[in-house]
Amino acid sequence: MDQALRGVKYVMSLLPDMGFEFRPIFNANPIELHLKIWWSEEEGGEGLLPTLVREKLAKIEKQLAEISHGVGDTQIPKPVTDDRTG
Image (tube, rainbow, N blue to C red; front, side, top):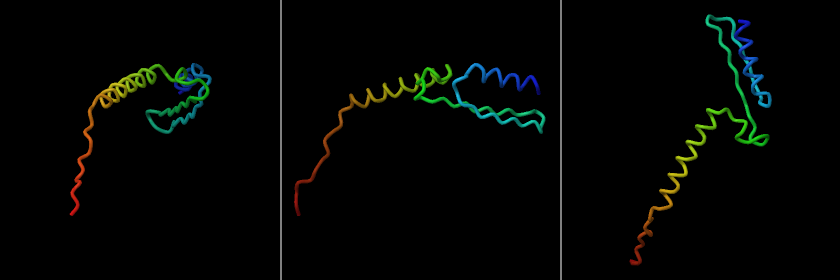
């Protein structure tokens, strides 16, 4: 268990400016280590995000840009109105 705790401390030491919540569960085999990590966009923006998250975010932003570009090029017909009264 000591090695597992040292692993969590190592991860936390790599991300000193981020908030953590750590909840170990040692009463089972295997043990569970729950580590939640928060970052604040106001404090450093996307630079504080883990690399994997930044890559996924960039991919999603690219997809959204392609979708919005496609929608912008679409010709939307004017609505059909019935001018007849009756």
